[in-house]
Image 1 (cartoon, rainbow, N blue to C red):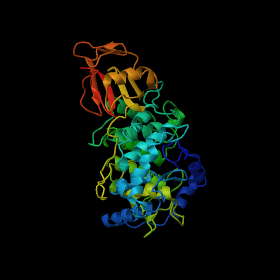
Image 2: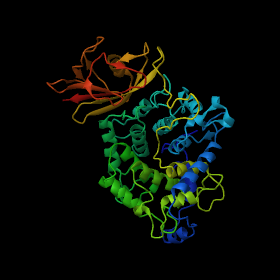
Image 3: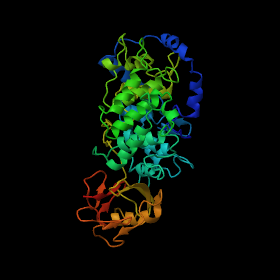
Image 4: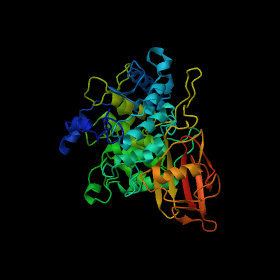
Length: 484
């Protein structure tokens, strides 16, 4: 399938979604009348109603699985179902066509991601971000899909050196938002943050700079453009941007999260609990907004998001569901369920953000995680690398690397980075330049200075003395930092 600029198909920024939503645009004066046509939802959703909605929603998403076990690929692209399954407590490895465990959804998806030609001949950064978020939810370590596929490194390779903090085209902005969601939200198998704080902070800076004056965001870049910053926001990207900030370490008490929350509250429709999108009232937009609240630990059913008539955004989403079939409609006036609306709604109703750690499988013998155990000698791969000079000079890259054994060393990685980094220039020099081991004394011309020395972190571990002999394993995220 072709990639959308927002990281998944049929999003506000994709041509298909924009053309569909164009028909929903109504004059401002008519918005109130339009809102009144929405059928009232039930009172604030109870735990029992939420549980029923989740169970029926999972059943519907299972019906979307291809006969070959797929959710993504030629003619079928419902891979965001993995994020909804995980949020609802269903392991992807337990989702099978007709009970055929050899075609379970996780195995088929992993095989697709590991294919050399995936995602296309002309990939964009959101392809890899989408893959990372859904692989993680499916129980596939996104950095270790296979000995040759590292989705975290694939994302790193789209860092914009001329616009630090942006990934992919800066003019689209959503490549940066989904980079934060993927890098901040997909943790190690042990639950640790694999991405260094310096990189997450760079992403946070750009997300803050794109927040509109009304407190929300859109998919286009607004930073540095007063007219864009003063233009109306949409609830979709506001939800995604809130989630991106929160998974990057920003607390939900932060003033910018508060501004976003106020923006969403201003869009509440009194008699239904829906949030009124610039594209009209619809399930996808509401699902994204609620997922943003969920990711920030903000309850979408509290007094803040309960209308004077006692309705909440969860009430609206559940009112969009067909039962017992379990699918959700896109528009309140639709008479049949829509796949993407059902995925977005279930993920939100289940309390999920834009990904979730995989639940424990019920299939006998199935592990919670699958990952390549080691490098394969002679098989080209990529590793994610950051180099932080301690004074704001952050370099980010994907390093093309062909190991000669099951493991490698930091010295091997630095040597490869000299000629095989994307973007180029991540490592221009490193001393000592050779040797099986020995502390690094200089990187990119910056030498150790007393207690301020080069240190290394692997997959978010504590920074310790950077040594050429430090062992590097398949999929490791490597961070170098100069300082005390």
